Length: 283
Ligand code: KIV
View 1 (tube, rainbow, N blue to C red):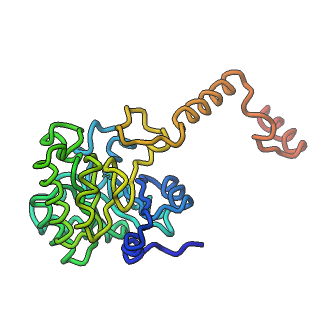
View 2 (cartoon, rainbow, N blue to C red):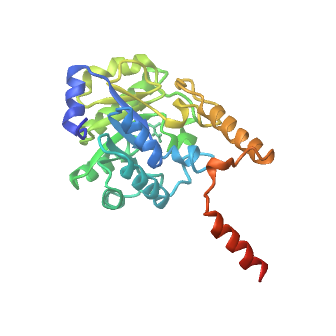
């Protein structure tokens, strides 16, 4: 039996050089699976917009949608630390908005922390949320909420100047009080170069092996999501095919009357059945 993961334990893992395992989850069963697999941190990512809600990008997902998903995940977790993504448009405009949204997430869902994207003004937002007593994860490199301004879903920091900007954002988020920072889709060299300056855990996704931990999207790593996976995805199962196979077999059984079989039905005493037929005949 594991006890609930704490922020101190994540820091201790970094100090001990023990990799931190993070995965996304978006509902009760995926949360239970992540917990049973012993992951350290579960992120209700706004990637939910695409993986479970069918939007084209993370931009349209709403606070209410993320609150519902995060609450379902909370109910499925007993040990992993729960982080919720604040969706696009729910925190950027002011510190007040950021704090109010973060408080709503903590109060409504019971999440342990929130995550926000980008450096720049998000550094102030992170500082304000931390000052309000809520733990924050930063996110730099490819930040999907503002991918349009980054030239689309492509790796970031591939020149020294661009990489320096990514590193500056990460360091600023660390100074603002973030307890961890996600590095997404940046050269492994960039992560390796900045790691000596990072005192808080760095969780990589397409950021190379030097990070303190790794995060992948649940639907990507299990092969549930139908889209083309990003370069950094390693697929550990092909559940989409298994699920299609299962539902197809069910459909075949229904069409050929192989399902349901006697063991899938309920029985009734013979005399009750006889009496029912007599009653129906009198209708
Ligand atoms: O939304 C998400 O799933 C994320 C991870 C990819 C880090 O932000």
